[in-house]
Image (tube, rainbow, N blue to C red):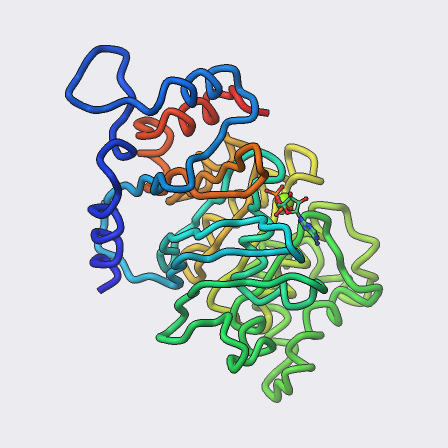
Length: 315
Ligand SMILES: Nc1ncnc2c1ncn2[C@@H]1O[C@H](COP(=O)(O)OP(=O)(O)O)[C@@H](O)[C@H]1O
Ligand SMILES: [Mg+2]
């Protein structure tokens, strides 16, 4: 079923957008010359709203954790994201990439109803999560956020002990099992246990930046989510701590679905299985340009704008 959605989306894309603009004259139609020129100049590319995003075929038969259809987001009268449709494969890492301001964080926040907390923000469309549209107001946002956790750019541990940071969410959710075990398990999964097991009473704020971020990941894991959203989780960290977070993302994908926003191309290439490339045009509305297996997006992008971005032509 999930595969069908994907195939349908793909086959409904106009062939002109699915075709890779070629330097030689082939049968495939290139995009309008003005768009190509603008893309080459790397500035203010106008995205034609009537052009559908390119979606590569999936190379594996896989269940979807989420399916976004025509998701639009508004802040008051400003539209930040326009009709984005893409699948989020289960137990895989999906990267959202694109220049600053194209709506990556906005889209990510939709996936666990965090935009509910921003006054004036409005989300339209369908985010399928087990046969329900999770943006429907009748769906309990608190439950959604328990099952779909979030890790932010800047590590934000509570001013509490390491132990209490991890136990916090589980306590709030009324967890009645063995808390010591839960804390240890979450810290192990977040690859932090060995570093903190003898000082669980120490303040979470006393840890290094990289450790704090892994503590936040442990805190997210402790409420037993199915999906973990990460918004540039390593961008405030040094290179060594960054690699640890990247390794951890790969490990976590064995048990969880991960959606990660990154503006670091190498990172997207290293950690993700699937990549969605978003871009905002002159009117600053973010749209999906291309989605597919990361390998395909990086080695065989079908849209000129994707190629320009991954080769570093946009800021
Ligand atoms: N809380 C907000 N209120 C109004 N506009 C916002 C808000 N958050 C983001 N925006 C706007 O929405 C667009 C997308 O922002 P964002 O999702 O943060 O982009 P990205 O994460 O890709 O850098 C930008 O034009 C930004 O200025
Ligand atoms: Mg952002």
